[in-house]
Length: 125
Image 1 (cartoon, one colour):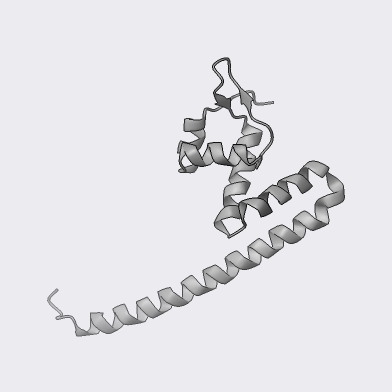
Image 2: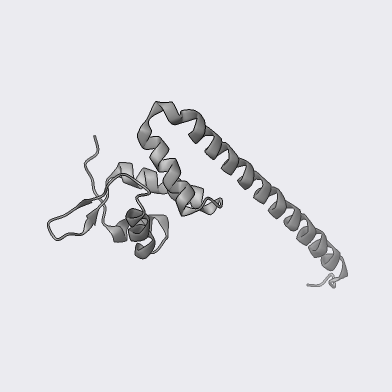
């Protein structure tokens, strides 16, 4: 088992979020209980880093903090909640796919416009 631990600042830097975000998610119980060192500072394990990666992914696909908390609570209940957790992840995957399709459409429009302007540029440029 990996016993390496990480500070709030290391975790924040790794995920490119603010330390405040990490502390807030901890206060909202969005990952397993975080230990404290002898100075009272939070100390994160790899397991909590993995949880945070999932939390940030879910948050970036539009799941609210309350909905993520529900997901975490389901996970803590164990195998009897697998179906419900599966449905949550599936819904978020579908949301992300819809967002990707919308972005792809925007990129196609931009590429067509660029091609239009490229035809109008002087050949010497």
